[in-house]
Each structure stands twice: as structure tokens, then as C-alpha cells.
Length: 576
Image (cartoon, rainbow, N blue to C red; front, side, top):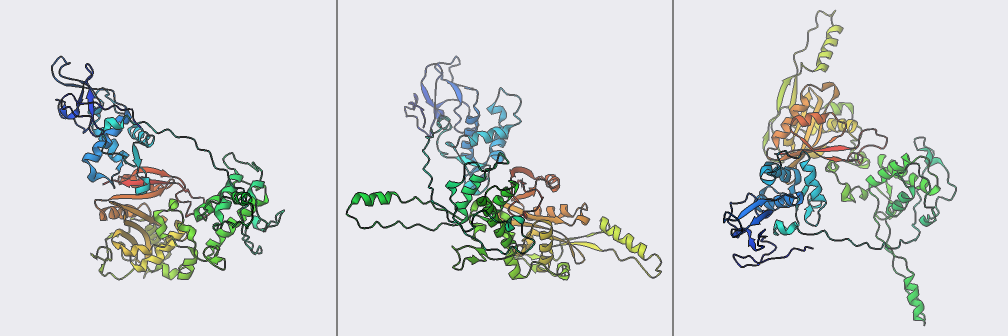
């Protein structure tokens, strides 16, 4: 909605529209289009945020434009309007980044926009972000279309900035919440064998009531137990009882034949309202199980039963056993886990490298042999890349490995052990070889990833684009590796893994591999996620990466339940 009144131009006699703005004289009140004003060419298109005095009223007999005090919302609207008109080539599907585009232009044109302000605002990007997020009736976020935050555009880019600045926020009317149905939610009993000693103690406890009884959420008191102010077990239980088991559609009951029509209508009104439910994702199940673990002793049998089911399903996934799901199998158990990709909200780019334990068992890759993990070196031959069809050389670079502390220590040990042997001679200087990823490297790299990152990683996909990879080899030992996914979005790539063995660190291996990956995708933005406690953040910042977002619980989807690693991550970007 807008209370903006359109006026008729006193010079061209045309009515002002939403697309063409007009200014009114500060003295006589006559309107004049921006195109009809005799003034120097403005820096920004559609810039009508001036105090206008026509030539008839001014002392100089010329049109005068005096810059008025800007409101920050008007500045953001004006810059976004010009981005849509002049810089569409820099957009991503019509969206512009609030920091790389909007804030950058305001910083460059600061003297023109704010001639009376000498000092620039240090929190400029924060002000721009607040104006974008608090005026959703003017701007649209690109998080849904692009899958990233920080990208915005105008809802109506053809309207003039002066008209957009007068738009008012829509008034939200409160709606009455529908009455919640008190229909009992059926539960599924899972039969387990409590004899193994590795099961948690709560699986061996007995309830006060029968396990197979139906749970009525309305019978649970409003506040059961609240050891932490932020946790409400009742709300957790009510939310998960409906989403743990996928509800089947309820067919309406056919009314019995009766002469009384009023009785038939009343019977149809009694039918409960059903809502569409979906199964919980694996991420939601693990997240809820962790919250119940931190809640302390569970006070009711219903909450303990829910926790036991979550523990059993988590153990079944870890051991590669079938899950109970009647919707996908007639016998009730299935190896497929559709909840892994049920909710796109929890999708991660690293999901492409995750493999379930059942899949690992079928492939026989869960515990590769020691000899298989060592077989990393291949014959130095040129091969063709399946991604770019370029001929890739067998080695990227070779360097002397005498500077590494691990090599120095091994040479000192061998010299001390053979000091009484007159026939012993030191070995010839070895080299550290950097090469592209090959099929012989995959078992060793998978083993390192599962031991140092999280279980279930399989990097076989990287063989499809070996140009964007780098593997460091010492003889047959894989010392480090780095992989980059070339096309994750429009003009964007993503570094998925970068690792160096601890005894080989601080020798420049990670710096060279990172430099090689950046050089392979010239002209594209390079992005990555790094743990909030990982010191490698300093390395990325030296190469020009900037922190763009703090993502909470990014790694919780992958880390085991007993892991003490930090689950939060920083999202970094190297802009080109």
C-alpha cells in the first residue's frame, strides 16, 4: 500500500506514474519530471531524493537540486534500482549480494550520497542487511532460489525509487489458531534383544506400563520435568510422535442408513480432522536423541519409550541393519532409508560423499586391509580427464622432502641404529610427489577421511573430475589430499576436503594443494566450510577467503553421537 499522490508535470503536462517520478517545487508546489529538470546528469538513475526549486522561484533563474538528508532505506532502494538497470551481468538469477554489490557501491559513492558526512560508517554492511531483512514488502531474499543467504533483489524493479520509498508495510491480522485434534497417535513397538552389553542402560529398563499400549498426548501433564529452561519434553514429545511414524490417509466413514437426516449430519461432524505427517529425517532423530540425553533422567514412561526407539534406530543405522518402516516394505523392515533426503532443508553439499553403513558392507569397503591403504603410488603415465577431456600429466610437482621433521627424525633413528655397521649407507634423497587422484588412491583416502573427519565418507566421485584434485605421496604413502567440486552453482566451486597427516604438517603441503585448487578454477568464486575451532581458518584467510556466514550445527549431521568435535562452521568465500 502507498499513500503516494501522483501529480501532473508542469512542463510536459504528463501525469506522473509509478515508473517515472516527479519532484514538487519547494516554493510554488508545481511538479516536474526528473527528465524535464534542467540540471547536471545525476550519478544514479531515478535519484529523486532532492529538495527541488524550479527556475521561476530560484534566485539564479535555474533549476536547483539540493541534497536532503538521506534515509538509509532510500539509499538501499536507490542502489538496488541501479543494480537492476545497469549491473544485471553481475547478478545471479536477478539477485545481488548485499555486501559485494550493495555495500560496495555505497562505499564508493559515499561522498555523493552523503556530502555532509565526512566519516564513513564502519557498520555499513550491518545497516544494509537490517534494511533488507526488515522490508520484505520491497525486497526479496534469494535464499530459496539460490540456496544461499545474502542475495537480494527488488520485488518490483521497474518502479521508481521515490514510489518504492513510500510503500508501507502490510498490516498482519492475527488469525485464530485451529483447535488441535486429540486423536491418539499410534506407536510402533520395536522388539530388541537386551542381552548385548553395548546397549545403553535405558534399553534394559522396564516401564511401569505396557510397552505396546497406545500413547495419548492429551493425557500427559502440561509440565512434566524441566531441568533446563530451554527444554520442554512435552513439546518435544508431541512434535515427534506425529512425525516419527508416517500416518496413513484416513478414509471418511460412510453414514449408516437412517431416516433422521439430522443424526447423519451430526455423525459426519464428529469425524476428526487429520493432518499430513511426514517421517522424521535422520538429522532430526539424532538431534532429538541428543536433546533427550542432555535432559537428564526422563520422568515418564512415554518419554523413555521415545528415547529408546531413537537409540535403537541409531544403532541399526550404525551397524547396517534394516530399519522398521511399514510405508516402504511389506515386512516392516527395509535397508533403504528415505529419511536421509526427505527434507531439503537439511541438505548439505557434503552429502554426495556420504555412504550408509549398509552400503559400505555391501561394497566391502568398511575396513580395507593395511596393504590396500598403502597402495597409493601408480606408474607415471599420462591419462585423459573424463571431465575436461584434457591430457593430465602423471605429476603436478616434485619437491625434496628433507625439510620435513618426520623425515629428519627417521634418518636420525636409522643412523643411530646402524652406527656400528660399516656397510650401511644413507638412503638416496627421496621426493614428495604431487599428482592427480587415481583409482589406486581411493582406499587410502577413504580410510584417512573416516578416521579424521567422520564415518561413511566415500570420495569415489572425485574420479569424475580429477583436474580439480591434488594428492601428496611419499613413495606409496598418501600424505595429504585436497578436492574441489567444480560446479556447485552459478560461477561457483566448493572445496570439499583438505587434509595433511599430522606428522607432515607445517611444511607447506596444504598451502601448495590449496594454491593448486584455486588455480584450476580461474574466474569462479571458491567457497568452503571450515570448523569454528579449526586453525586452518588462518591459512584460508591468507589466501583471501572472507567469512560470509556462521552456520550452526553444520557438522552435527555427520559426526557420531559421542563425538566432542565442534559442530559449528564458518562459510568462507574467495571472490573473483
